[in-house]
Length: 475
Ligand SMILES: [Zn+2]
Image (cartoon, rainbow, N blue to C red; front, side, top):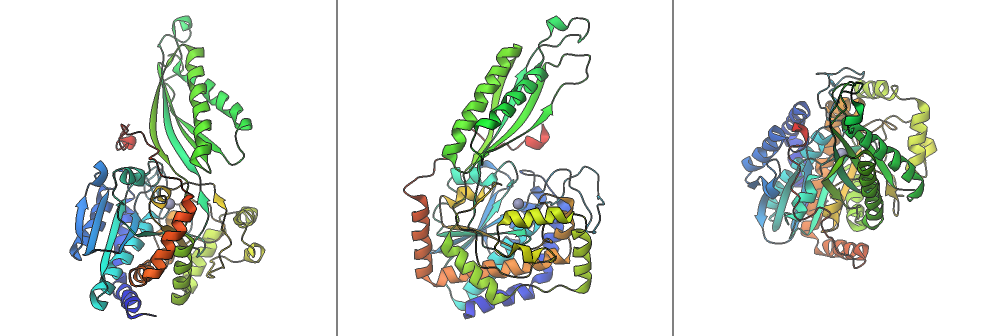
């Protein structure tokens, strides 16, 4: 192991209490997308304390920021997320027990995401300074990954321009620098405006906006048979009227449409727009379409994946105490075995059957994911079209747990989560040091990126006039 990498690992060991403290503080704040004021400030202030130059409120988003240290090329980027999910408030205990009912919680472990990136960036800085490594390390404070896709707006405003490679870490149940792509998506709100009237006394005078929402949903549900197999369409009714004896004059649905490539998404999206117009026509209501955001499918970088995997193996995965294993076992028991079986089966990992009785997977499997597509989506994708990018995962949760769950919140706030955080920080820092010190690796990563693009260019999926949906949680 090079001196630079040793210095980075040592820095994380010496500063682990502080990193854990920051992760736990963000876990406690549990702020939703675009309102992560305390979380983003905590991270930015910490970077500033260590000599990073901070640019706050980038891309017109108060909770987005960029922190830079060093000068000149290469420029290595590290992305940190810190948004929570609504309704998932949960204590760090192995049974369902909310802290504050209905409040947000870190069900995707983004308190760890933001802090592993912080640890990675600060340790890289320490290595650069002490080992005299030239170049720049940049931390991208990326808000609202869930639903509102902060990075799309940051990419549109060219915040990531000039970055030679970008890294991030996501908690999961496996140690893996995945080569899976992800679904592109569009999020859109349909506002229907009708006319109120007494629902029994003068229904003929009313024009129900709720009818329009329901008819649109029926149309879309019939459309499902005629879209490609891998497409996904989800919706919620955000507003459906006040009470049943008043014909509602306003109703609103929120749709999310996904497909493996943006080219496949667009025709499905256009058909959904037609269905919405049809519903308005049928009910004599007025339709207003609010485009919330769109994102691309991910282009994972194989060269970066190999460097990350090699560092993962060199550092070695964390061990767990008996108490931690007991906690994990209790959490694991909250899901039926058949769910775990299905989850392992759908991972298509070659040795999945051997993992049925494993709770915490400490192995680092050979990568089996090339050419596969994950059904979820991430705004890391939009960065990945612009620079070689790798988001890897480390084991944080027991195998088979559902994502976005109270179980994830519990683990992300206790010592198993902390171990994942420190391990990931070391992997980010050692990979960044490799990229800063071995120009041939960076060159190869760039070539792999070019190959993945196949001559295609990135065009922002959000229209030029669209603004980041900063007030979504205030509506
Ligand atoms: Zn996430």
